[in-house]
Image (tube, rainbow, N blue to C red; front, side):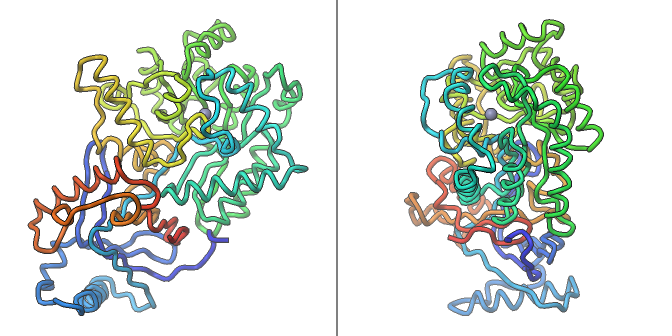
Length: 487
Ligand SMILES: [Zn+2]
């Protein structure tokens, strides 16, 4: 099992890029970062602190890296006093280290349906594609279960996703298997056994309410016993599918369970106009869709609301008051033609935290890098329609939503999302000189550039990565300090 492999203390040297605040990009060249045996960053030295002590220019020619390594290690020992064995990993020029992506909305069981069903609207989509596939996830169908769950974890990890908030299916036993697979591949994940009890096509779902609370408690105990020491790598998340398929009493039970067990919540909201009308009809006592969840104590700081395309002013206010996060799924919203979420407004006007979701399989693309790109393009469409430049998301906005915004959404903003002392080392090494990208010599960062030139070149390279790159540029992936992907 990857998740429990021991690791030596490791020093990483290279360019570290992250987004500590919305709209802010932090680029640290020649940065030395120490990651301890628990996968926690406990040492960071930036270039200016190092150059005060060492003259890098004196090391030239083929011995440069060896001398640099010796100097780094000596400097580390001077500062840190660590005598144990440790690794030293130099990330070469024109590669950089970025936080692992966080996918805050993905249905692992629906992976086989990616790319099909174009032009079918949400409620029909569920009936034709989703429910029949999800219903086949049972213990007497283990080969299919293992095949689908293994493929989606490997695929997302290979795209640099180090943490994801998954929907599995209504079946608890196979949801346990999904958690086991997360641990064996070493991906950090939230397992959302789906809760729903209203579905005319599947009368057996009506039994759900009787056992769903016990099921989720059981999942929690099971993952607690399987997680490595001191690491909550896999956790259950309470997952009422969405209001139209849940009774009032089921929603009430799930709201209470979240408070009793301190478990996060994820669900869908306001994806499609037909769905919103249906919710109005089913819950006439509630003033709007968000109010249905609030009435059942399901809007909390730990709640992820997926899609949230057509929210009213009152709903935005309520979601902000409750400090919930939105998972923006632009690929899915475009593919199923659900609409364009006004994300720039949510972020900067309503001050709601927004993260990114692939929404496999409503969205066809498992890569959060692509979702950043799509989120920016959808915002440009909004801007073209409104004639207002404000609606356009920046590259920094997209990078923030894909990492620290996601960390806030899953309640791990103190644990992952950026490179800071005390955080876990969840990261991806990006190599821009592989894959599909053609770069030219004047575009590459080199030692003779001054800091301003370096920063400008790096910004352009980041743009190229987001708009022209893909999973081939993600050369290795680390979760909790462990290398889980090496290409
Ligand atoms: Zn979804």
